[in-house]
Image (tube, rainbow, N blue to C red; front, side, top):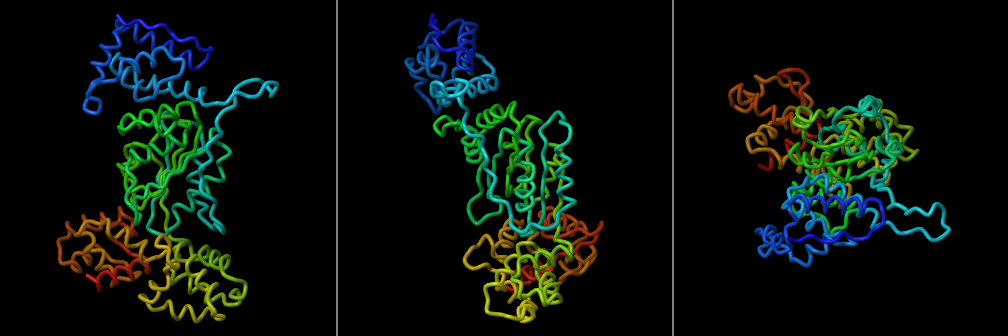
Length: 445
């Protein structure tokens, strides 16, 4: 038999961990170290865990790596999530430095509370209705994690809203906040769930060397790490529901905000997320933002400011780029820039924000376009000739020379990806900037 003496450790989380691990070992009949080595053989570990490593994991006094503990708990028939929480609590104690003698209470100090939110957005304007919808999630706790799904077209300000609102309520989450850019619609590669979970776990204080390799195991440990914590988690730029599903916590204490160009219908239907739909700014809001961003010399041209805001389709990203273009130019008359913007292709060329592809309108739109199925992308290009017009389903079918059923299916794809807006059942429109980009794609195809 392989009975092992328990380590002598102070009372608290570490002793609780070893007490439970030894109880599990005893309940399994005290298998020997060699027997446990045999049981832990697998494709990734063909020789199993070394008997010395197993003995040290049981005898302490330091806690073993999580992959070793996980393998032992699995082979001994224990509850992995229970032991993940016990291991996490024990590791937190191990990682906490002792306070110097005479330094206050004499208790150990904790790790810094994660505060990972990006900087707030300057000159944030509008979105009062959407902020009210988000605030409703701060009400009484339910039985599941609280989730908001912010969706909208490229450049409409999803991240800006999420970050601005999160800064305003961050003090209601005493255990801190986490942020991650999932790169769902980015020039860089998509961030897989394994990489995202590893990053979130490191943000929660888990050593990189201790992060499991398997996604399911990593997700279980992530949920266990959040148990009992009241945290705000911002999952930015998700591609779709499947992309974000492994990153959802299991506790109602946490509040999750997800942003995506996808409608995230599955997150709403299956996980009870509150959908927060983001459209272009109202005319007065767009004009106010433009005035806020422009240098004072342009404020004497209110008609030109309103016209420029409309030519930017009231998209916050386009408004910010246009304001920067005006402020950095030698132009003294804003009406001159408005005349240049009147040409669709010239406007797309001007809205490029220098050499930053993440703030170039044509590039940002292209990331949505490239994610469309081929037949949906073909229909998108045809909308280049329908600038700001209301188009019904019959007209879509005639324009694309397809059946009404095919038109219904493809418009649904475009609506779900937020490149086409459904004004009412069977009637659609596309904002002027996207329409100009669609016409550009049509010319190039």
